[in-house]
Length: 497
Image (cartoon, rainbow, N blue to C red; front, side, top):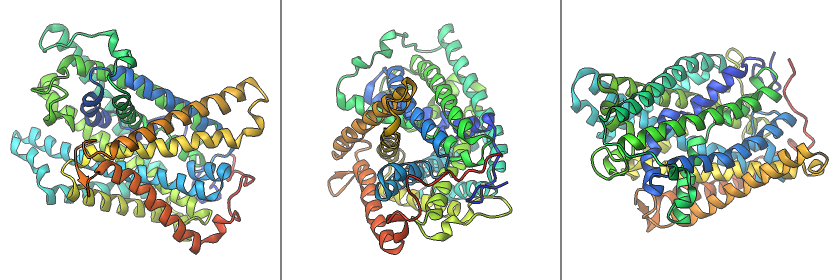
């Protein structure tokens, strides 16, 4: 059976959706790519910033759950914000979601390239192979190959995605558990320069300034981002109204536990110094596990490289689910040209939308790799802006959409007003603070364009570009923007099982 958009229904149960959600978040990739950056902003207070970052994300997840129960739709933010605030705001919400996914896809591919050549170096015993990632042309070509493979798997439909994710996520979590246990074992045995654990690490008030707090929080929010893919597949789930929202909540809580345990083990083992294994060492900050793999896991270090590589590969593939289905929904509701609404009958997959997302992601990576030598740092910082924008907008849309029922029960007051409002306001504050701070070229990697920080150029520039593109489609496809194809009263398109 298929939904009105042509997607196959009943393909995913609770476990499958949780696995896809975890794979999109990619804990191994996030830990290696953000621990150094976050420590540079807030020092040893990693547990505090992860917990504080989890709070608005969890509140927003409750908003998503409410909206999905009312109107399950693969367009998620685009569809719900349109229903609440109208077509123009909804279109920009969809653009923010697409931009966030495009940015992270390029970043995932970049980290995958680094760990691919590190893996080859460890496998062959030739350290020089790890340096091949610095060859710009080879780096770009390898990245394009990875993206091509991810697009190919995604085009084969959600069932293929499910099978691939079971293997990659299972391996990733197994090795992360091994790494954490081994790190604590070496600390206990006195085989590491141990930084003593302190409960002060859980105190967010110990962070030096609000700017540092906002920067750390933006990175923390990025670390949790990706669970919303659980709602994106609601049309392809069994009992999508309930299962997808529950899966998103489970995935977010599981990730919090992984981050807390993993970050504590890493900080205690490596410390926060700027030399040696220290997390503030610039040579370690982009990919922490490249320096810690051998000291922690010894001869099994290659498994950690494989885990990060599989994490990137899993997330690279599953992340295509969100932009492809958002583009599908935008095409279906005529916010974009009709070809985006095409679904392959054999695989029940939006192949055109998936390939389009892959091409744009690849082009973005090539451009960023040419402009900035610190592409990973800058794109992660800019991604935080995009996430705060569209998550915050969705949370506030929940409040407005359900405004008539906010005070009809205690449950509605909490789940439809308090939680979404607090989450939306929190993310809006982080968005504004990060935007102001990122104007300064010293924010992020220090790269700039005409005297303006590259993080600001990427983040805000993409939103401005989105507004301009929206105006073009407003002239070409007026039906959506005049409220003829998607309104508050448009019924859910999911066909019940």
